[in-house]
Image (cartoon, rainbow, N blue to C red; front, side, top):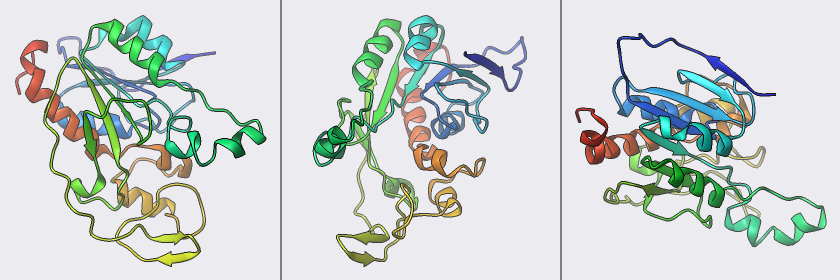
Length: 245
């Protein structure tokens, strides 16, 4: 069963920029977009309930179905299909082990792209290295002074912008690797144990202060990434959607 939860009512006299955050999780991307796009109204959609979602409206349901049915109603769409089945380790290093235990992950990038393109709306789709997203833009936590590296790739649909400079990393990611422990200025915001980040460390490293859910915090995109994306979009296409840059 799906449900739609209205979190905050927007005055009827105000026509904000309408943004969809597909596969929203707790809304890391949503928070960045709201920072970048003044007065925008963001709808999040996720297959799982997200009580900590930070946007304006949350719809629990299938993201691809929602995009197909309602994507054309939005001015801009951000999508972050689950990456478990997309990264190089899943398709390479861990493929045999996953097959042995019958573990499979959905491959959602291709159908998500088809749904996004069918809307005719500008979009951005984010995923990890090794995934099938087009590598139009690469962002890294060091670009924004964050405590995580988290290289992520962004496919731009219906608009374009220039790749920003990628500064040198200041050191290693803290934790165990190949039997050796390393200190460093970045935390590993995934998994547990082995020196990986605590809830509070992830909150600080990603600049997410509205949730304490360890799993959701690990999955969430740092808001700084989509704040950059949102500003780039506004500069590129604002006149087309009636918003002043």
